[in-house]
Every structure is written in C-alpha cells, then in structure tokens.
Image 1 (tube, each protein chain N blue to C red):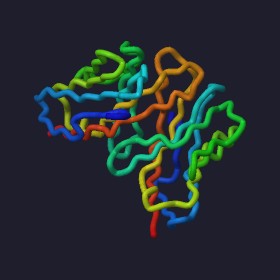
Image 2: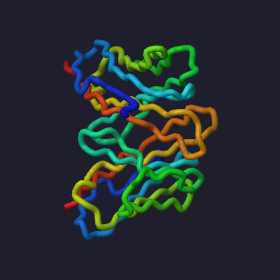
Image 3: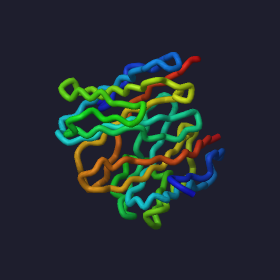
Length: 117
Length: 115
C-alpha cells in the first residue's frame, strides 16, 4: 500500500504568490518523520524541510513551511512568495520509527510545480 | 568537493557490459543509500549501508551488486542489465543519529541508459 500520497501531479503558480503542495501519509507507527525534497531538472534531490511526529510546532525554513495536521495525517508544503527558480518536482517522504537497519525513506510520486512570470 | 558526489553523471551501456557507479560523501555521515528513480514511479530504495555493513537489500536483482569499502564511499556494480533498468540512480547519506531527524542528503544522480 502506498504510504505517501501526493494527489497533485502538476501545479501552476504565479511568481510572488503562495502555493500549497499536498501530502498525506499512512502509518501506524507513533514515531515518524516527514520530509520534503525539491528535485530540479538537473536531478539532485534537495532537502527542504523536516517535521517530526512529536513536534508541537509546524516546521518553517525560510519561504517553506509545513502545515502538519497529525489527526488528518497530512503534511502539506507551503511555499510563500514563489520564485521562478522554485519550478521543479517536489517530493514528500516519510521515515517510520527507529530501527537498526537504517532510516529508509518512503517517497510519494511527486508534484511538478511550474512558477510563471 | 562538498556534499555527496556521484560519478559518472550519465552512463550508456549494453546489456552485456559491466560498469560501476560511484558515490562519495564528504559530510562525515555513517549511513549510505542507493535509490532507483524510474519514470512515473516513486523513488525506490535499493540498499542501505550502516557503518559499512549492508543492513537492507530491498529485493534487488543480483545483477546489481553494492560495495561499501568505508563510510565515505559506496559503489553499485552493474552487470548484464536489462533495458528496464534504465533510470536515475541516486545515492544518499545520513548521520544515523539516534533520536534525530536523520536527514538524507542526496547526490546529483547517475542517469543510466541500458541499450
């Protein structure tokens, strides 16, 4: 079963506007972490923001904020004041619990964001 | 060099060739990962190495053979691949800090085409 769902294959936003990228997750583990990555056309996955399941406050990193609604199992990414350079694929990912085998990430299928002038 | 580097960035190989992908991290991390990114599919975890020991093999075919000689270097040896193995192969590393967010940092990837 898909653990991370991103329902928006593609999004458009005008420069300087805010945009919200949706992410819902599925886990029965009380301890988990949620990540957002940006992947430009060059291919590199760039870490943007992290939210822990026990964090009381929504995470913020510059123009990025994470709207964490634990009861709804949603972790939407909000980008404020969009810039042309924000055009890229955006991936939501989850790490469940802690184990000795490694902190593997489960990724969603991604949302393609296009920022227009 | 800083961060996570991968070489080569692009690779075209025939099904009978043997090639290797290289990943190097300059972040002092203890865990390294190989992911496969195919078109229209989520990233798929292939292998995890923790302190040079393989801790996860996500049912990857034996034509992919990882090697981790130390915590800074990770290789993916390829032989007798199939055209469906064409994809972007991403390497990542993380601290494996207990109780921490353990963010994975990715390299730029190797775009592999199997003819």
